[in-house]
Amino acid sequence: MSLKYENIIRQMTLAEKAQMMSGKNTWETVDFEKYGIPSMFMSDGPHGLRRQALADKDSIFYYYKKLIEPRHKESMLTEGNYQLILPEDEKIFAYLRNTENESWLVAANMSEDTISTDGLKTIAKEKRML
Image (cartoon, rainbow, N blue to C red; front, side, top):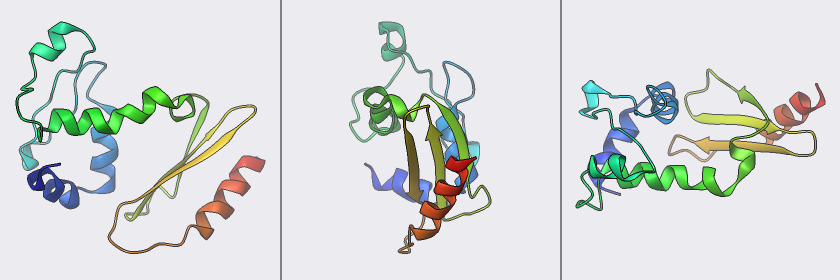
């Protein structure tokens, strides 16, 4: 990934990062003028791909593509009940995905600090019991 985008991502708040992943609508990403990130049209079909600047392998398009890839491979990332954990924490983005048979704790350390997962495991177990 380009150093330009790594620096922008470091500056973004956790809420902005989450908003970036949710999108403006079904077909477009959210734009962030203060970071110089335009909204992008996303599509699996040829019309969407032609609208992208595909020549630059360090483009934000390829970065998004890499981020979205696991969602297509692991159904638990998109199915089941969603519970945000620690919504006020600026260092940890974490959520639980629950189905009748399975639970996943998904967590990302958004800081450069080493953070223990013990607290998250405890919270996840308590929420799963509800």
